[in-house]
Amino acid sequence: MVTPLGRFGLPSDVAGMVLFLVSDYVEFITGQVFIVDGGLTLVNPRLVVKNILKSAR
Image 1 (cartoon, helix red, strand yellow):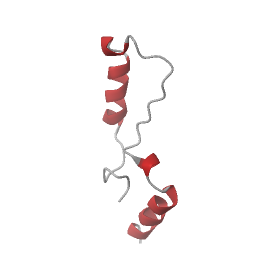
Image 2 (cartoon, helix red, strand yellow):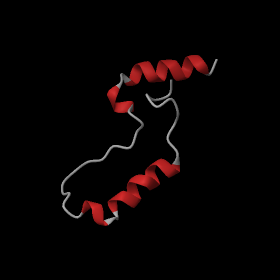
Image 3 (cartoon, rainbow, N blue to C red):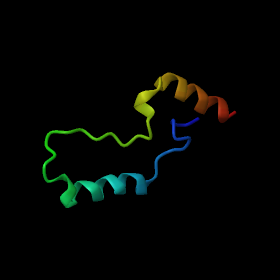
């Protein structure tokens, strides 16, 4: 497991958020932080790193 979504992020994942942020849908959104990390902040980062190192062997 790399992230809860099971993969690393792609440039297209970030591009989707950028397209949303420049759209008319966000005209009433202010002062927010949008995290585009595939759910990584929901899990223990040490566990994720441990699994990455284990799979690299």
